[in-house]
Image (cartoon, rainbow, N blue to C red; front, side):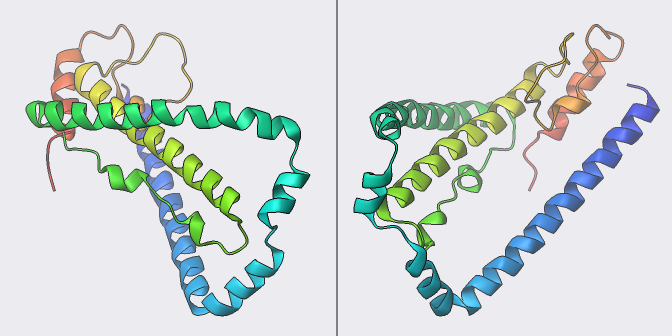
Length: 191
């Protein structure tokens, strides 16, 4: 990879870190505001909450009919969660890859919102779990790819993970072995 591309990648990574820090700061500010106004805010939220019966009565019938299909994916999510956790627990120590902290991907804070009824809270919990499992599995898969095959594809792909930009260019065999060792070292168990 040429130096200009490396400079751009580093600049992008720095901007992403800066953006993430701003999001974190904003989240801290909102959490502090929520905590300090907790009673007043909850009262206001309860005033706009739609009751369960009205929620169901006003719901689109197709939404109700398709909900079993949506919720049937829970089986796949739970199996994926279990299998990825087992895979990581067995293989990552052998490969000396730092483990992904599952808890960092499982966030269930929407149930505290006073303007959601029990059905909406259940929906939010389901979505949080499903998206959390997928994000967790994505990170485990990304670290696995970085360890075993850090080579870019010949075609442009969507949904690239954060490690992909530093992978070896497709067909560039000159630095492949050195880059493979470097990629693996970067994944090492360091705290």
